Image (cartoon, rainbow, N blue to C red):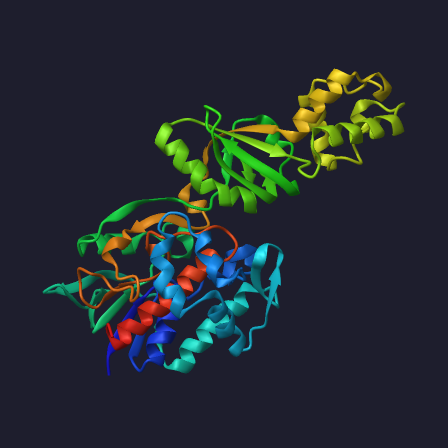
Length: 415
């Protein structure tokens, strides 16, 4: 019976362990924390966006950069396969806005529990508080690991140690060190899905405000569009976050790293209305509230927390009676509502990123099996690889699919 070691008790590691055991291997999972699935248990604000429900042919579009690397493993483990895996084990799912698939219970802990119980049922030996110090490689073949200062022999090793985001959950970049020692190149890890820092002080006033159905666009200093998204975003004490911001952050961060320039972030608060229709809307509101002061006439148009900010940025006197607002002032207000502008100065640290961009360079990884092309019997899965996706379940899907491929071929060999 083949002995397979899996390093890392995250989604990729647990799926690899379940799959390898299902293929008849004797599997030991090594997790340095006191329990498995710590990061998984806090994903999606504790609700766990398992995958996306987009059709298979559109799945690849969720992975910028090296996404094509995932083509083969998605053929063996698609997003429908992931949903089926959980539902067959009693976890009902539901599809929410943006094709996001969540557990019906709304509890990430239930997702972790399904994976844990599946490992136990498959006979996986789970060793927590087990710190792997190094891989043992002889004649370009992995033969085991050094763990807690002892040697554990193995026929195959799956490295599923994650990236550098949320280090308190165990993702501290250990896998990069081992991969590099084995001869693999490491693409400099950077924050992938990460909140953005803004220069303007007024964002602190808007802290906690979520905007829905807005269009956000970010531009280079010269005016070229970097990225644009429609959906929901959030103001924070340092800047902006939320689904569309996280999705855009990868491209914005790459631009800033490359050029050293800031990003110009513009929010269209009323994307359903063009300038003319929005101006007509303002005219109706100002007519309806003609005797009110300007500062008290925007309740029907904007969230309460945003009103004093817009009033201040508009340059229109707060105590000006609406009937006295000029056409020019109204036109300027339309532009402000269509292009509420922020200056992006950077991202939050990689430790706060939802996912790590960068990692083990994939050209020397077999995309079908996840086995190293350099060291026989050495496999990689999940976030440790230089593959990352957009928000919306794409990164967990990649973890499950690469984990399944690595576990299968670690157990059966490169068939």
